[in-house]
Image (cartoon, rainbow, N blue to C red; front, side, top):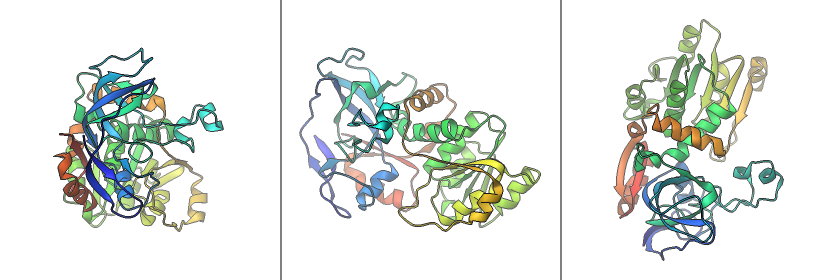
Length: 345
């Protein structure tokens, strides 16, 4: 089967290879991949900026159909439509696993970087990590369940976005757009999303298309002044930082109200960030840092999609054959893409 493989350590070292079709072990299922999303993590792996164990088939955002059952699988049948949590090979014995946080286990080896992933026709996954995909959710939308579940976990479960919150989202990339859409879907009073001139061609117009209340290009409008105006001087109840950029991280503490909440999602790519510590202290705010997803985030995400509360199709800019991966990756890195899907032949 054709697969996109990270072949060795170092920048680059990616190519299409003919790989053997896997077979499910006891407790696993074989999944035929129908659509797989390209994540920022995949870009980081390409540039040797994220842990991985080569040679490894890349890709961890996917939806597909069960093709075969391993011994002992009892709750699923061939032909069922599924997505899957990526928490494979968690040890089950450490403090984190035993407190229900297997997603944070140091021994976890997720598909796409720790074990073979979804940029191919077939992959195997443990039965215990599967979630059924409703018939009214397309495979393409299903491929977005994993990144959406991260946003649901971060913004709704961790940072506890509440009905009637005024929310500011910094960074209108795919995750920022998903965060803004989740907040709208779950009852935020108003949502502002802030971007730069580089976002003006694709990302900010998409934010307008999906109904975000205030879409701000910071080169044309002062977002902080707008937050002050719209909140009567109080500040945002919740700020979701999705860019990982130093200026935006500091701006989060400017936008947030006293005793408000900041949800940190964007990663800085290994860079040290200078922070106005006193400003943060005087806001007396709470910062929620986030990593990976819990079980309940997946069911909630699938429900949001099934009920039509989030329009995943609006975020999909590319649907390409696996053979066109290089152009897809190039478009993502040049911000000419939002969510890009690779469709195995």
